Every structure is written in C-alpha cells, then in structure tokens.
Length: 230
Image 1 (tube, rainbow, N blue to C red):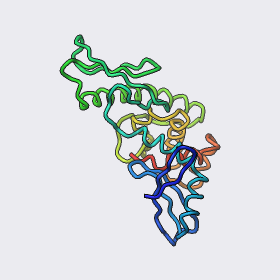
Image 2 (image 1 turned 90 degrees about the horizontal axis):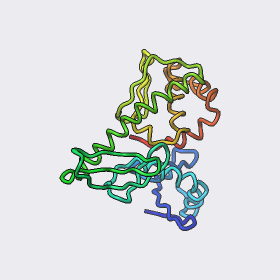
Image 3 (image 1 turned 180 degrees about the vertical axis):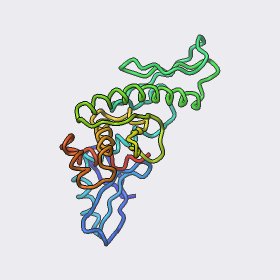
Image 4 (image 1 turned 180 degrees about the horizontal axis):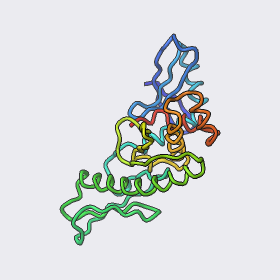
C-alpha cells in the first residue's frame, strides 16, 4: 500500500483508478482507511493530493478509529462526547457484575474477581453508552428542536444498522446510540439533519437549504461524517 510522509506521521492510502471521474476524490472509511479515486496520475501527484488534505485526513482517521471496538485493558482509550478518555480496569470483590464509572477525567471499569473477560467488559460499556445516549441525546434533541423551531413526534435512541439516524413518515426520529461518542458539533448536525426530514422527506435542494438555515457550515460537518459508516 502506498504511503506518504506528513511531518512525523505516515499516511497509508490506496489509489483506485476511475477514468469516469472528472476530479480526484479522497475518502476515509471505517475498516477501509484512506482512498484516493480518479483518473490515472503519477505517484508524485497522488502524494501531493494526499498531503494537501493531510490534516483533514488525520482528523477523519481519529474519528473513525475511535468508533472501532478494541480489547479494553488499563491504558486503553474510550471515546465519549468527542474526547478519548483513559481507561483503568480494576478488580473489586464487592461487586457482582462489571460496572463502568465515568469520573469526567477517566473511565474506571470495576470487575468481579471471576468476571473480567472482554465480553462482560464490552457489554458493560455498551450499557453505559446506551444509558448516557438515551439521556443526553434526548435532552439535546429538545434543545435543538427549540432553537430551530422544528418539531418531531418522538425520539428513539438505540443501536441501528448502517445509519446514524432516520426519520419515519410519522416524524419519529431514531438515533444510533453511538452518536454520543461524537463531538457535540457532529451530534447537533445529525439531529438537525433528521429534524429537517420532518418537513422534507428526501435529500432535495429544499432539504439542504433547511439544514443550511440552521447550520451554515453543514458541508464541512457532512464531510467529517462521510466514511464513518456503521
């Protein structure tokens, strides 16, 4: 796989030749990494294009990688509300099942003597994320709806397949619980996006105009979200 040096960091990428494309495009996708698509060009020009977008690429890689599940041990990092927090795993004979405690500076994962396997730890983290997402996303939606003047019939926060959010024909909004791992600027973008669907069910020009009315820099945020597929 080709790579290019950016300061002290090596950025690996793959180049996909597509002669039908009029320009060259860079994407960063979960489980795939950095991809450059476009007509055939020299390696030197490929590297130039990657370097031109290097800072954006590194930001996207950090966001995408933060959502990946890894083995949780002391020293791991967990993503929550746009930041990575240090993890401390400790055994506690006084508890019956794995508990996750967030101290606002780190995550402390308390495990019974006989229950410190990754399955139980990840299950406890999933419970924590679900509980916090239900509380914070529901509260945030009320705030965003009030600010935008857009109304909705209800909100459901849960794990979903292949999407961050959706809006039903009856204006029930579904939000993926992992949204709570993202920075508030991206959370708000997702919420406004789904609220805009309460009046425009497609992605027409009028839909995007409604989004832009509330988030003028939506294109920048949409670029950050693209590739962060679930």
